[in-house]
Length: 294
Image (cartoon, rainbow, N blue to C red; front, side):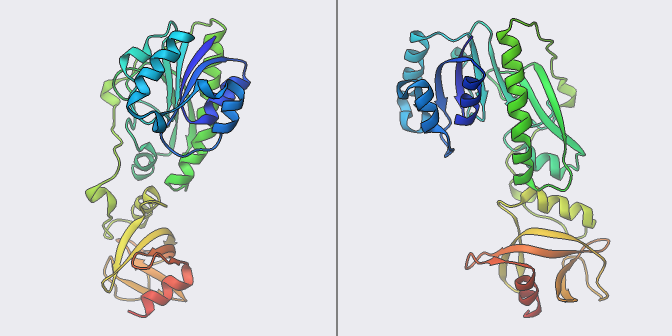
């Protein structure tokens, strides 16, 4: 089965290793390792870098498609909608979304799953359509969210994402008829990039809720707080008992050498951050010193 591939180099390399013939591979316009290996496997002429192709991308894809028409289109971490004409291979087009669709459609399901307090998330192999994340589901795999931050969750989902994609591609290549399930529109939630209030937290919340928001924002962009007019971006904290002080939620103190911020029910102990003015990383000791000095 010939595959037209769109996404990061690793996915194309693994599909090639599985024995699929790749008509061509179009690489996402983001930095990622593996391009040179893929060019050795397929030949440089069949690897199209979207960033370099610019306005000529559609013409180059059309020429590559005509030269070796694919039986299936596969997308893995492609960063934009595929035009409708690229979804017309005989076996259609499939992609993987890092959530349990229809929950958390959109560009940042990692933030959404953590911030919502989901116990489990996962990956969904689905049919690609001209709209984001709406196609019928062919396969899903679950993963516990645990105490991961957004970056850790994204990395943890890479392996099941690739595993599920390769499983579905293999079964389609073998001519298997896969069950397909339409998404329940009543269960849809949206996962945009966080902005506005989604970048902040209310320290009147419970400790558990504050830590969820911090993990959802870590390590980038992080949760920015102000210490005596100085911006500090927090990227790590843990639950702590309420400090033995008459602090209001959002007020900070150093107790036992650890910087604490009062929450609605207890406190968080600060472990990692960055001084926004200098870009200096701040560990537990530096954060305590900063709080103590103000």
